[in-house]
Length: 76
Picture 1 (cartoon, rainbow, N blue to C red):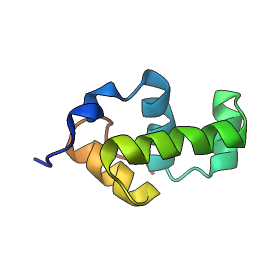
Picture 2 (spheres, rainbow, N blue to C red; picture 1 turned 60 degrees about the vertical axis):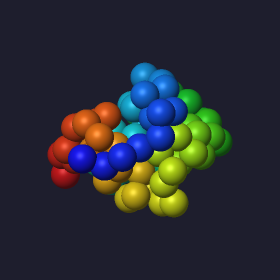
Picture 3 (spheres, one colour; picture 1 turned 180 degrees about the horizontal axis):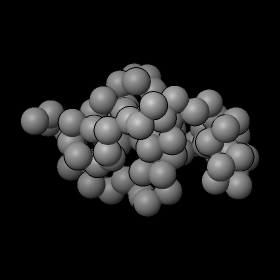
């Protein structure tokens, strides 16, 4: 199992929603549309997720979150 910082458990429900949609290969614009938020808000959530997971990219964040069972497997 991947070792993550203690802040990982602090992923908000919305951050998990965003990351789940990112795992399904949706763009920031598509995620924003699905969640009725702005693209800027999606980007803010992703920055927060990267910090909490110590991730350097969308794929890295998805892989770390999946390995830590924070989100399910991608459905694409």
